[in-house]
Image (cartoon, rainbow, N blue to C red; front, side, top):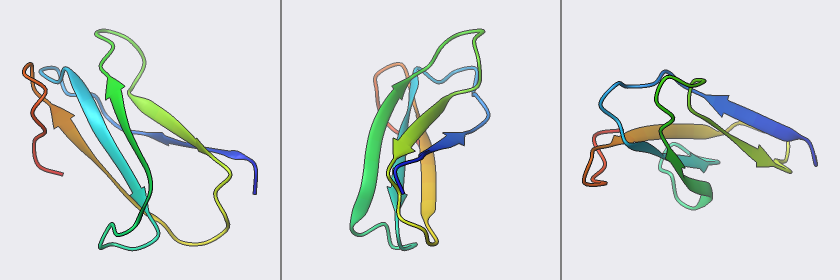
Length: 74
């Protein structure tokens, strides 16, 4: 508890950003964290950190955002 947990995934060339969700159940209700992450062209793989997670099992997912900011499939 109190430590940071890093979530990282492969970048998509056409993505303008990403929508990240973290939950304690695969139903994603309720969410533990939700973030919008901007894409960094040619940079490090996209990632986010969540602080203070209690021990246990979590589900997480990421959707890429297009140029208009619309999210694709999880």
